[in-house]
Image 1 (tube, rainbow, N blue to C red):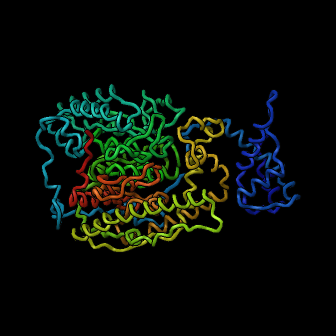
Image 2 (tube, rainbow, N blue to C red; image 1 turned 90 degrees about the horizontal axis):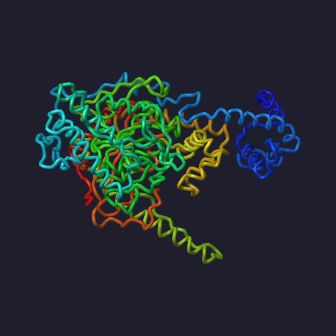
Image 3 (cartoon, rainbow, N blue to C red; image 1 turned 90 degrees about the vertical axis):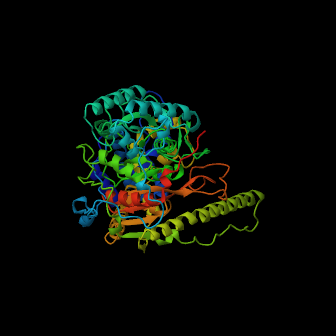
Length: 640
């Protein structure tokens, strides 16, 4: 039976339906009824009933409908449901995007386009001297070979580049050193899904031969790196971190992998990610934070951040949909760049949300992020969302010409903590839950108050550098309500997983994990999905307006901005901002993965810099200056 769209719409119109409810609700209810029906030969799906319409209407927040209205709707709804089966029979792979493309630039956003970007640069090519603090940029970049090659484990990519180009070390030596460290620390940190040792050693040998012959490809030539295991690499599994996908493989390398191969970089490992890009728990365990291995590394770019922080790779590629570069970079003390949406092609990467997924580098410094982004950005002719923007990285840019704002309310003291009080006739169980919730709330406030010292110190440091900080605020919009777009798209990306029951193979099965989230998303009305996208358009225009008068915005790494800027597609660069002292609140007994401020004494805190669309080079230049003034990116954990 084919879908009679006109007949369905006519039936709904006659029934007085002015707000569409998600037909998937009815499909799900009917499917449940079908499962309850004994299978004898061929089983046709049971018909949608008036009772199902009542249930679906309640879930969708429409109706209730009168009996005569429901009667008019039945034929059209049953016809429409048959169309779902026809589409599902196509078995559309995860790599196929919907027939619409998201671009984050507002219609009048010329001022934020790369073609109009003017990168500030000093006339003499040098960065202006910093007013206070050690000028780390003046320190030597290890011009001589160290006594032990492993002394280079925590060096920046830029330092390793100088040594390899100068032939003070070889790519093979560096690759062997990082492979050895990956093997040594994986049992403690659980960040490797697959070592690509044979591929890596062959690449490293080729790099040494080319460099010896004077064929130098650029700053990534001969540099070992790791890929989040949602990037396809031919000849190796691409597991997406998920049970049931352990042996999945693809016949073509992801575009980012191809570009890094072309740059001469050496792929040493495929790193862990929380199953289907959520959190830090995967089918092999939980990836750990090198600063405190009792805690997770956060996710979902869990292994990428953990391995970089542990000095087990020079840089890694992560991905972010809603915090997956920011969160692990914060916990692990890395420098992470979430590029403007549409800057880096995602071809060959697992799709979670076609309008929010972004690929970016996780490194030890902002300069390193820029060097990697230079190699991977730009259209590939396959990912239609990629904008033909330019990236003009200038490490000597005169950042003092930039206009810097800060999200004032995010640095202000939080409102007084309101604890739950006993209600009338409170049971002992209710009392226990209330007291436990109050203990958690007090602990959260203590951590927030403690970390606020570092946030305020960052503002003081910026002012001491001569930065005139301009207070601004994010537009007041319901960003959290818009984030349901992500789950709806993710449920579509993994529709077969839900409908086949293979979601039972995923490691995590809690209320907030993917299996339940995918099922819940099926009850999200199509009209509300469109309305949320319209609200997103408002957010894009209003957040973009902030960057008409500012180049950079400084903010803590969590809270509303993280959701807002992922929805609007603006770039973010997350930098380490010091280590908590011995007086820091102790970590909770259980790491639920929901908070990045729980590390406790001796663990890193972070700061985030935001910029306008495709202004990623300015972002890196300003973060580079901050790191020169502070040196926090040079700190690393003691693993032994």
